[in-house]
Amino acid sequence: MFARLNHIAICTDHYAINAKFYEALFGLKTAKNPRPARAVVVSDGYVGMNIIPRREGRTGGLDHFGLEVEDLAEARSRIDKFDPSIKLLKRPPVRPFAAYSAHDPDTNIFDLSEKKMQKDIYSEEREETVRKFSHFALRTRHAERCAEFYTEVFELTLLNKKNDDPNLYLSDGRMTLAVLQWNMDDYYGMDPQRLGPDHIGFKVESIDALKDDLEDLTGQNPLMRSRPLGYGDEGKARLGLFQSVPLNSYHLTDIEGVYIGASEE
Image 1 (cartoon, rainbow, N blue to C red):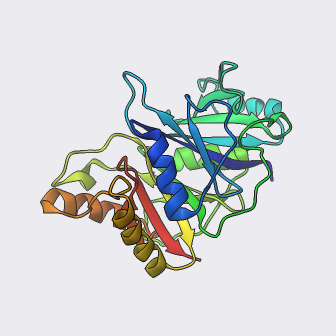
Image 2: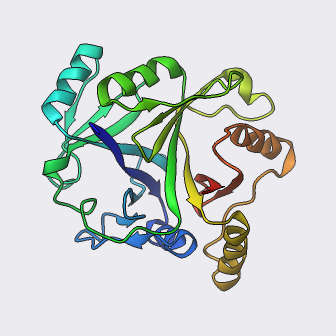
């Protein structure tokens, strides 16, 4: 396996309590973080999620994802061969979990690091949780071109899909990168959504158990509440677009409003 999706990042005004939401509802484990003022990292034992305070000028919600590769020099060479206009930016030393920031052909941002360089919060050995990350979804204008980029550069495997599904699904052997086709016509009846990260997905042992746990969690702590979905005409339209992705059978949000899709093992 040349590359794997090793982390997801969220910007939020409530980074500490949002981390507790994922810990309480999905059983994710909090990493030993030497930088508590900068972020909280939670993990399912395979994928980490960096929950970071929203800085001035930044948009809250899903922010980017990270790829870990076997050979960073080879990855850089492949990126340049695929499209010389794609740039890599060296990350500052205060962010040790990524060597570079980069982008795909539609300017979706991702971090890039090398496996042997991982001496940080994402490389900690920890037991895997029962509820696990299953996918990270981008909604982008040129889905096929972006899918080609991730398959050719990072050797992600293109999965089969239904003929009437315009989206593309790429796998690193465990996590799926869902490249969703952005279409202006999809936003009839609601405000159009910008291109970029769309939602995250979890595999759970039972949807019914997840629903019960969410209700119990909200009853115990009203600060840890998922936002309501599907209310009003616009809410129904937005939920319908979310539900059109076949990877998810249950739909909810975190306290920031980030879309979360869940399905059973």
